[in-house]
Image (cartoon, rainbow, N blue to C red; front, side, top):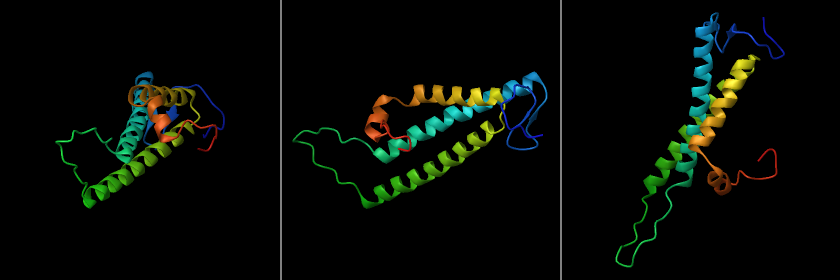
Length: 139
């Protein structure tokens, strides 16, 4: 039966009919998987941001010649950014579907993983630079 409101039970079917929990150990492992997947999502966002931003130019001295970037390096970065975006989007949708199981423990595990991942991999400096610190809800 599909729930349409939050429920608190160790019995949950998550994403696939074969992923069912019926005992406390299997439920705990499922919640751990949700925490790890959510933290990994934040890691992917961090890596994608770093690839998109590129390396900051370092201040050189007068003796060091300027190095020109090859055209291929920009294309590789663009492809890497696209692949990371696809992986991040897929994982984000899977996390959304997991939360839509309406199991309270799964919901809290996903939120915990996102929070821990944000604290470990990202920070306010990323938000300021990326323009994510805005007053608009859709930005």
